[in-house]
Image 1: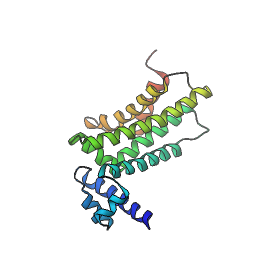
Image 2: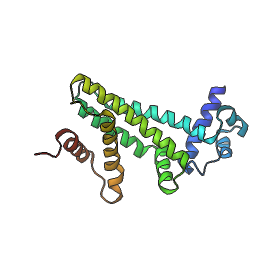
Image 3: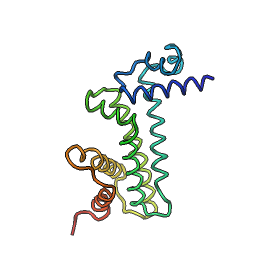
Length: 190
């Protein structure tokens, strides 16, 4: 029963954060949506920030699973990296909670939201870095600083999927693939 209540609270908070943002969500709203007393929430979570942290932990697991499912062990590393990164970017672009939290960072700059989104990015970079390290060990790619490379890969996908669209037409998946191959596979040298 306690697990059901905790999950109810998490689901209600996720819904409220997705609709109204972190800053505008109150523990009272979450309690009402979860159909529990406010005190019940505090038996599971010390604060609204702890509740958000728990939710982001679940989002991190979801993103990693999404990326893993996009990869095919019979495909080369860079193709798998592209496929996984594309799915990660799509997840962030379509997931109601990440959309709202990214809007809140842009519009308000809520410190708690900035921290959890940094945590999300660090987890994604660590995931990509692990894949890069494995590819280096297998001899699929040359030796490189895997953390910097993972960072650049993620930031490139974010830039092409989000930032570019602020002033240009969205890029089709094929164009993003082409650009990824140009910059990460071929480079700009003649």
